[in-house]
Structures are given as C-alpha cells and as structure tokens.
Length: 122
Image (tube, rainbow, N blue to C red; front, side, top):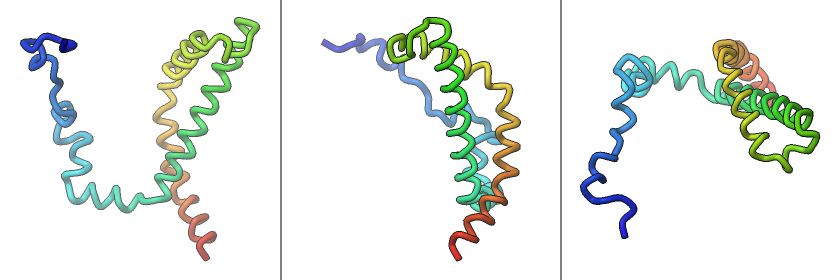
C-alpha cells in the first residue's frame, strides 16, 4: 500500500529551495560573478574560522544544556535524553541573538587564520 493516496502526492511535493530565495539573497551569491569571486577569495581561512566558531558554539550550548539537565533532574543527561534534547533546543534557540556577533568574530578571525596557515605551510 502506498503511504499516501495518489491524488495527494502531487500536492505534497514542495517547490525547489531556490524558489524561497530572491535574486538579491542567497541565490545571488552563486549566480553573480562578483559575489562568487568574493566568496572564493574568502577561501579556506574563512571556512576554518566558521568551523571553529560553529564547534565552539555547539560545545558551549552542549555544556550549558548538560549542566541544566543534570542540575534539574539529578541524573546524567544520557539517562534523561528527552529532557536533555529539549533543554539543548531551548538553549540553541535562546542563542540566536548572538548570531551577528558570531559572524563578526568569523570575519575578524579569517585574516589571523590565513596568516597562521601561511606560517605553518612554510
């Protein structure tokens, strides 16, 4: 048996993701040659900066959620996994106002990471 009736299958298909991004938004980074060149110039240093900040953010959120879950329940989070996941989601959502700061730090770190990579490469 199909999971959904055939007359509903066409209406349940979502449009492609680029429909939701206007020409001036995310899609223009890949279609506009000048923006594509700028994105390429950001390069590996920016990717490493982004990765480092993302890992740091998730480590901090995990630590806070771990502490809150353990202090509220008196048990380690692996024994109260649903509570931990709910706490993690709440802390993650509460951290969204910090996003502009994260992007500023990434932009500021990129030149330093680029210099460090040049020193390491010789």
